[in-house]
Length: 319
Image (cartoon, rainbow, N blue to C red; front, top):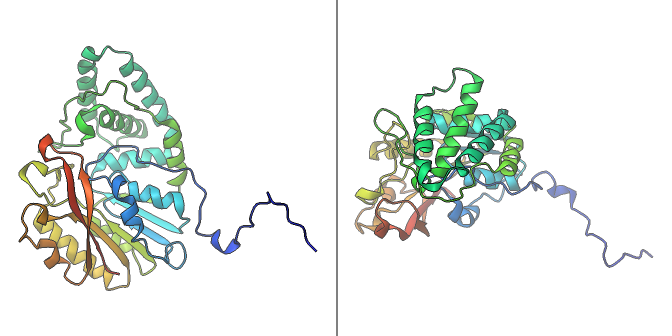
C-alpha cells in the first residue's frame, strides 16, 4: 500500500508539457494605438483548441504593441512564430530587444535617469532634442545606430502625449511631449524576458502579404490592421507614411480569404462601423462567409476626450 503525503504535489501529465509553458508574464514594451491588452480574454476564447498541438505555428503580420504575441509566447511552446509590421522603427525595436537587449537597457537607463532628474517645467527642451535626434537617425546604417534609435523610440513612446506614435507626410515623428510626472521608461526585467522569448521568432519589416511564405495549415494567424476610422477624430492609421484606407482593408480581406482556403485558422480584429452608422455593413460584406462577433472595448486614444469611452469592436474568424 502506498501512502501519499497530504502536501505532495500533484504529478504533471507529461502529455501537456509540449504546449503548456512556464514563462514570466510578458507585457508590451510600448503603448500602441489599437493595442489589444483589454481584449485579451475575448481573443483568447478564439484561440484554436489545437494551438500548441496540431497547430504549432503562429503568425501576426500587424504585430503593433504585441499584446497577443506576448500572451501566446507566455502560455504556449510553438515550433515557429512570425511577426511583421510596416513600421520600420517598431520592427527595429523588436529586433534590438531580441539581439542586443543589454545595450538597449544601458541606453534606456541613461535616458530615464537624465529625464527624471530634470524639473517638470524644464523637460520640454530635453524631449524635443531627443525627438529631433530620433528623426535624424537612419536605421540599418550600423548596429549602434539601430540600438540608439530603438532606445529613443521607447523613450519617446513613454514620454509623449498619450503614448501615441504618429508621423507626418515626411515620415517624421511629430507627437508633442506628454504630462507624465514619473514615467517608467526602462522596465529592464520585462525587456530581458521579452528578449529571451523572441530568440526564435522571425521578425520582418514588410507588407502583410509577405507572411504567405510562412503560413500553412498548421498556423494560427491573427490580423490586427490599422482600424477603419469610425469618426473624423478617430483616424490613427498613420503610424507609418503608408495610409491604410478602405482599398487596403479590401486587399487584406482578399488575402485572408486566400489563406483561409488552405485550412489556416484566422482571427481578424477591426472597428465596428455600426458604432456611428447603423447601416454601414462594410465588414459584413467583406467577410460574409466568416463569423463576426461584437465585443465591448474602451477607446483609449482620441484627440477629442468626449469621444473616448465604450464602443464595440469586431472579432472576425473562419471557425
